[in-house]
Amino acid sequence: MGVEASNALWKEARVMQMYDHPNVVKMYGVANDYMPYYLVMELVLGGSVDDYLAKKGSKVSVKARTQILYEASVGLEYLHSKDCLHRDIACRNLLIDKVVKVADFGMTRHTTNYKIDPNKPMNLRWLAPEVYESAVVNKSTDVYAFGVTMYECFTQPYSIPYADWKADKVYDKVVNNGYRLKPPDLMPRKIGDLMEECIGPEESRPTFTVVAVCLKTFLRSS
Image (cartoon, rainbow, N blue to C red; front, top):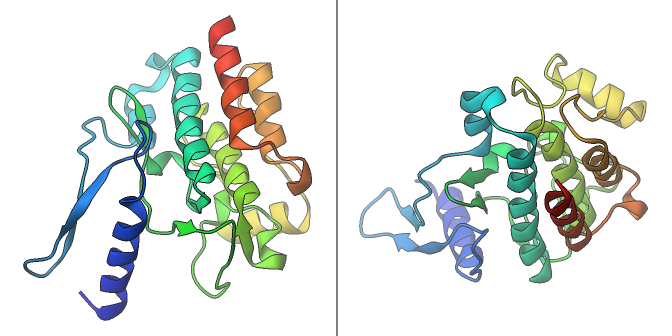
């Protein structure tokens, strides 16, 4: 493991040890007796949500998909309450067992605004379009990524966002031409409205507190 990778590991460990929430993966420490070093984390047997949706397919009900998103939003609400930006929200970074847990803190920053390096690889399909101009990520860009994750969660069969487009086309459509994902057919109207708010203009995106309340309200009424 090189110096940069080792520093990144320790940075992730320091961030993750600060948090304790049922919807956030618990990090216990770092095994550093021998190379390579390892993060010692809570075991979540069900794996990632993207794999879960791909394997279960149509067996995952609308209510179950909404529950996944609700539990993720509660975990993200907690992180934002601690001024923690996740920066890589996607179904692949949500783990599921009895409950959903937010995972993969490799890109997390303990700050409310963070200037990124535009020359480094970015997860284009989940990235808020304004980041390409400002190179700044914040709580609202996390919410945008969650909106894209909402889309992911309701695709049937499961697919990544803009599955038929290469990265350069995604950039041209989303950044240059203002294209936004449309709610999948399986997604209920109220959830679709919330998704569109999350991926809408930066100034009108809801907080994760609002997102969690909306999803909980839908679950109670369904």
